[in-house]
Image (cartoon, rainbow, N blue to C red; front, side):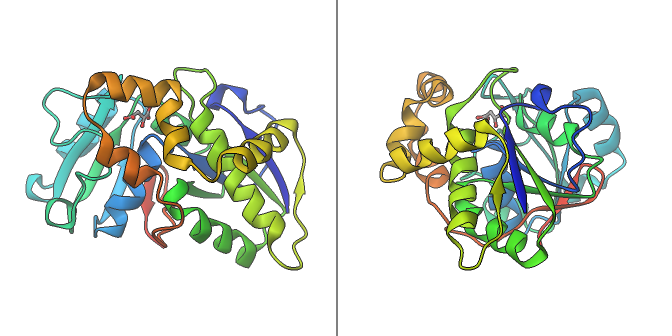
Length: 243
Ligand code: MLT
């Protein structure tokens, strides 16, 4: 398995031919997606564009849909939910389709939506995604972070490093890291893995969330490594189901 990591959607070369992509947005889109599916959401349909989201969601029965999303970390006006992973409890999301748009995470998903296999990963489902990859043994895996408006974000690299470290440490693995971005992510994971929550809080987006209000529950949830075993998987373009 050849592993590469790109910090943001814009860094993925046009000739990247991986058949499997893993999209990461630790704070908070892919953590929220994992929690929502773990709590019984029917699916999470993701959009980079809000008009497309409004058009698609209006075809869905209103009692079976929820609009979820943020811009700049704040809930979008008129939406049912923001992007907090602790808000997508089973009594809120069970059986519902979530129509989701976020500042960065859903853009990364769009960038790789034509890839044959797409998973989303956060720290909370790192082991589940790693085990899925070890089982399926794809030749190439493109790991894609979400960053912030086109620039690097540390928390996504931390999770990319956590995934690669797990794969490299698995017995009999044949994984090969093929870019320096991923080597740096593994070094970051090794330096910060004993204080994940502290690391998330120090990041620029962590600081942004702190400025917007109390996000203690979100930080705790986002930092609980390997706490759930959901592997959100794209089965229709832009639509993630649990596997
Ligand atoms: C994003 O997609 O940019 C994030 O998930 C932002 C957030 O923390 O809500």
